[in-house]
Length: 194
Length: 124
Image 1: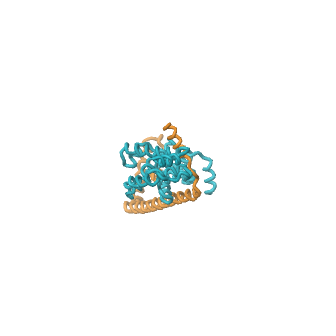
Image 2 (image 1 turned 90 degrees about the vertical axis):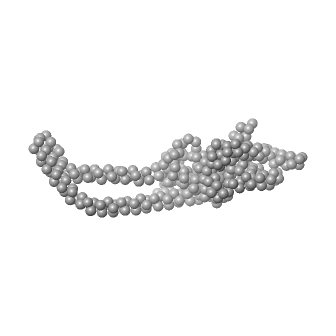
Image 3 (image 1 turned 45 degrees about the horizontal axis):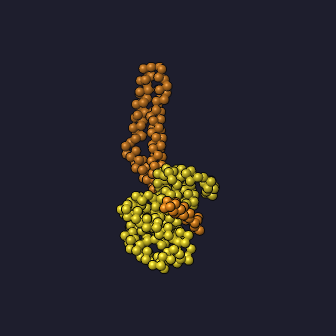
């Protein structure tokens, strides 16, 4: 019987699955997890969460989403909604563990250690994100990966809006350089000339 | 230019590799959902049993059945009075004769309570 249920749900749209989940149909919600689990875990990893921690937070995010599924009105995508929940949960965990306060220190360390990155390394988004400071990484991923506005990110991070905007701008500048066709080489070239 | 890059970045963020253990992850989440649901069902069941026991004991203490019999007698009395008043109210006396009306009202109350309980459990 469970197999039959799963095959019935695989053909449904996310919005329909959400409607089923809102009636308490857990198999419909399981199908949503199957579809979007990787995306949510991916955002958390891009925010800097390690594998197991990212999975824990992603699980909590999905359970929270199930509890609050009636609040999902279909404005935006289901994946985007869960990503925002996951990002906030991860930040809460950082704040609880007092790891958020140390992000600015990590940022400075990361900046000094990554400017000399290997120019020959394959540059993709995940690699490029590693060149950002921790706070920049969190801010950029929250705004571009989880779809939070600057204000929402500032509120979640408990930082002034201007500070978040500065982190995002600095992060974008670094990413733009790293993701340019000659990204790493350009950085190396400037270092060589300087 | 900047907006182009931001759109490109959003597209890059939207592209994510399907993780190898995606199925296992979904199963773990479903297991946790089911575990939570089972615990909730046990809790509701236990609350129902406790409520039932308390309700039954209250019924015993308050001599409800005796009161229902008295109400039945009263209904019979009212019924016979009504019969004297008007022949057109035969249907009412038929219903209330022998306390049927009281029992029907009690049954209706039980159905209503069941409905309310269902809604409350649904809300929980």
